[in-house]
Length: 97
Image (tube, rainbow, N blue to C red; front, side, top):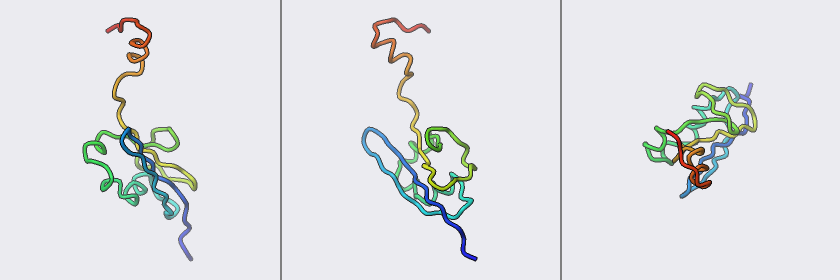
């Protein structure tokens, strides 16, 4: 009996680069397994990968999460600044601490 396969994508975006890797993986593959198959460690600097979190369609998920057909695994960078502070600065209000 042949192993069933599903289609997933692994995506990364930064100010300097963006890429999406389309994969066909065996049913039961985890988020971590998709990252390994996409060879993410070869595409990103070690410090970027160490500080990243991962999710599926905008929802942070643990690496052991089993993927479904059509899922997009996303690699999230840490925020450069607090969004609330950015809005306060744009509005001319002083940030409270």
